[in-house]
Amino acid sequence: MAEFDLNKVKGNDRFIAGGAIVLFILSFFPWYTVSYKGALGGLGGFGTSGSLNGWHIYGLNKVAILLALAAGAIVIARLMGLLDSIDLPAGVNLITLAVSGLATVILVLRLLGSYHSAGSGSLKITAHPGFGWYVSILVSAAMTYFAYLNFKTSGEAMPTTPSHTVTPPTPPST
Image 1 (cartoon, rainbow, N blue to C red):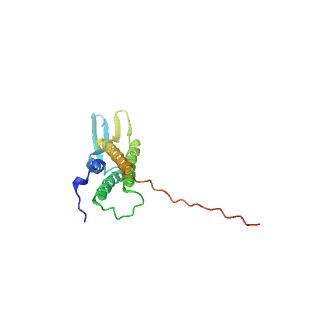
Image 2: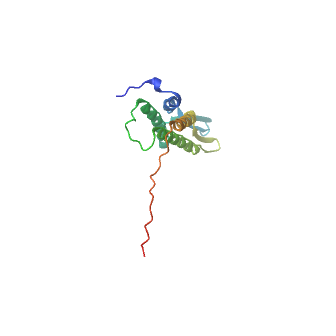
Image 3: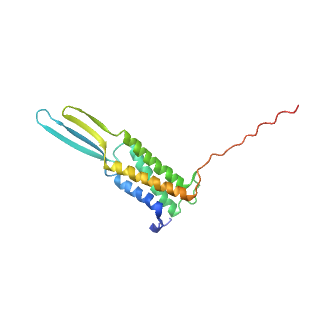
């Protein structure tokens, strides 16, 4: 098994791997809050609220968390040399950029449809994103930025599809 030297994690890699750890911790913070305020008959008003963490809401958010963790794992695997003998369809820095970027896009798109409010009179129910979700978007975006910087400085090229040149048939001789 390859040994891991923490001193190898420098520069952009430190932000990507560290961001994955921070995002994992944030996944246990409140990501979604539901509040109820209202009156119970003639007994007066009352209210309650609760929250869910990143592992208890929307399946796509879980996918985004796992993608961000994968981006950090790819960086660590690259630094340990575990990816040296694997033939990848694209460069490892491009893959890290794509994975962290996809995590950010999912988190932002899911945020757009996550505000809900209902009620009438003295009864009101609201549901909205919480602290963990907002900060996770920022961390994921930072991971994507540093993955972009890694890709830009790595010299890796975008994968290309093979081009086939077709030579036209020669016309028959007359």
